[in-house]
Image 1: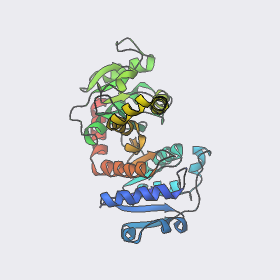
Image 2: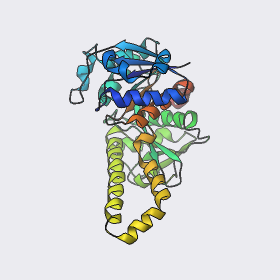
Image 3: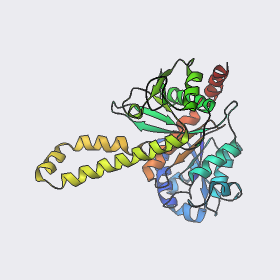
Image 4: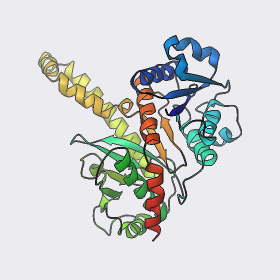
Length: 329
């Protein structure tokens, strides 16, 4: 049975939605939860029938969102520091946190360590597409200044995730650029293109619209571009939902149409809701860390735990190390 360390104190809304999400996950999956946080606040939230699958690791110090990620390295009694160290010490198989994303990334990279051959771990995020399947974008924030070899490694790591976790038999990998032509891009992306030529799954440059049209499975970019892409897509999805609601209220005919389209709207909401995907894995570390949104609800927490279970149950880390050897040759 896998053991998942959960930072119960890191989210914007305290431990309640995190514990609720954990309980929902325990109902559906077999795993052991190591909850890190203030036990006096956490224990009353857990029904007695789940206590045999839960252990408590005491921590009363919490790293606030406004604090710098570097301060996390000095605050050894915070819930996120202790949760990460449980993976480092092989007590837990994975760590899930809805807290400070920069701190989680820094601690996981430095405390758990990188896989052999990995220059820089990357944060990957799942995106919906117009054809119903999912696409994977990396990096979306861990590395804002990348070299070509970093992008090439992101492609290898993304390909492994698509195969092992998303179960895509033959994933297509694209390099995000300002045009599909081989000549497009900046100097770093052009150099990365050359490094990726020999990768069987590499289809060349792709543009922003290809993230959502299902033509590729893995989209590679640096963390600066990737984070802007992520935040922009979240904003667009939110705006579309608000625009639809505002216009529906203005007309009785639109209200009637909306009632007939309820199933369609339900599908749309599900596809653009980050809670459906839970969190973003930090790929390239010698373990598993899932970084969730600070405003995560119970559903997002549950799905983040499911991601941690899927990741830890797979051979992705071993596959990444093997594939990197091929890239080096």
